[in-house]
Amino acid sequence: MPQVSETSAPSPPPGPPPAGWFRRRVVQPLVGLLRQGLTPHQLALTVALGTAFGLVPVLGITTLLTTFAAVRLRLNVAAALLIAHLWSPVQLLLIIPFMSQGARLWGSTGPALTLDKLRYLFAHDWVGALQLLWHAMLGGLALWAAACLVVAPLLYFALRPILRRTITPRSAE
Image (tube, rainbow, N blue to C red):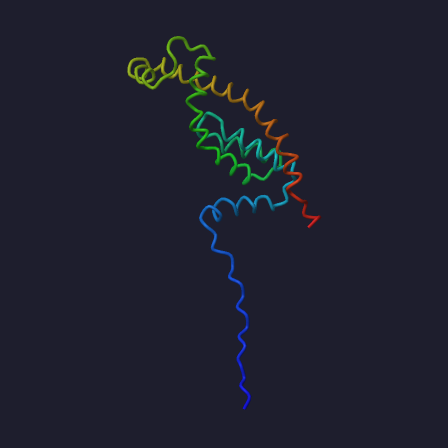
C-alpha cells in the first residue's frame, strides 16, 4: 500500500503584534482623524489654530476658544481639540513667564511677579493682589496674542506644502 503523506497546509504568517498603548491611544486616533476627509489646507489650519489656542496663558478657556474657532471655520472640532490639549504641558510651563512679563508690560511697578509677592498681597491687600493678577493676565494675553500672530501663520504656511505632499485625496485612492 502506498504511503499517504499528510501534507499540512502551510500555516498563515503570524499577524502583526498587538498594538501598544501609545499606538492604540495616540497614533490610531490621529490617523483616523486624518482619514476623515480633511484637505491639507484644513489640516494645516487645524494644527495652527489648535497650537495657538492650546498655548493660551489662561486655564480653562482652551476648549471654548478651540471649539468656537473650529466650528466657525468648519474644521474638524475633535482634531482641533486633540491638538490643543496635546499642548497642555507646554501651556502650563508658559503661564508663569507670560503672566510675569505681562505684569511688567501692563505697568506693574516694583519687583517682578512672584509667589511670595502674591502671598504678601493676599494677606495684607486683597485689592492690590487682584489688581496685580488682573494686569498680569491682561499682559500675558497680549503677549500670547502677539506671539500667535507670528507663530500660527508660520506654522500654517510651513505645514501646508508638507501635508499636500503626504496626504492624498480620497478620489486618488
